[in-house]
Picture 1 (spheres, rainbow, N blue to C red):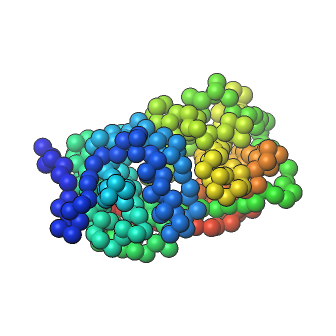
Picture 2 (picture 1 turned 90 degrees about the horizontal axis):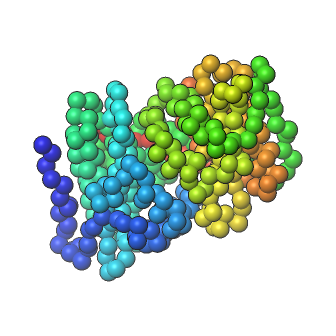
Picture 3 (picture 1 turned 90 degrees about the vertical axis):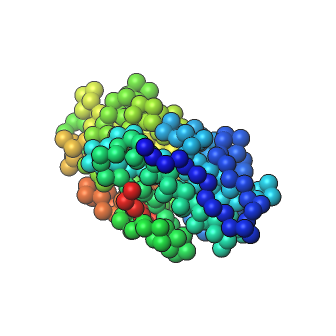
Length: 333
């Protein structure tokens, strides 16, 4: 039996703080918190209230138990969440996240939130997969040494490095390539939604940290998301079988902040049997060409630098260059 989850001990100087779970009604306050964090930490990540309400609606999240907001004087000054993966074979992973408003840092709020994350992640792991090793995971922006130190003090260690990469689309874009072996590149349609989910799960089956997407999780994070752009998403078909896919998104908050429409390559994968046939290159160049023609002036993506399928070199060949570096930190539970 796991011990009950309790609120952290709050220092006496912070007695005006109120801790409570987040709800959909808190999305506007959360958006204000994210905007303040971005202004200070310069991650180039922008979210509006609708984005964050959608995030709080994740089918794996129980906000009443898996989230907490810290309020002071009616203002949200910090938050934390935990998201436990529903399946596990060798390791059960729980993803955590959190942030503190810049003007509220240095008061111990961040330490309390990290302790809450570890406590809740441990509880979730023991409830669901007690016979497997458990891990808490969080990506941290490499330049944010203070936040990295906070998690290191709590037992997290750097395990993986990721690049945010971008390329401009405001000049001449090379023509899309074609895969070999008679494969066809076609626009994504709803009829192939389930086949694409299964193709994604197979393509990423051996990738570090991957947990297969359920239909509900796939719809929430991919084809059912408000940011999903089917007109910028494509499939590589062998007959009627999905050999590869590229799923693109466009974030309205990003466009509103920067004034630039960006095609974000959210998922790109090739099933093992079709690797080496130029599928990924054909899908990516088709998406870039189409995004340019539809008025996007930038393309972006995130890549695991240790990806064994050569993704980083593919993106570099297609004109992407590294902007931000993120580090995946892991703590045993």
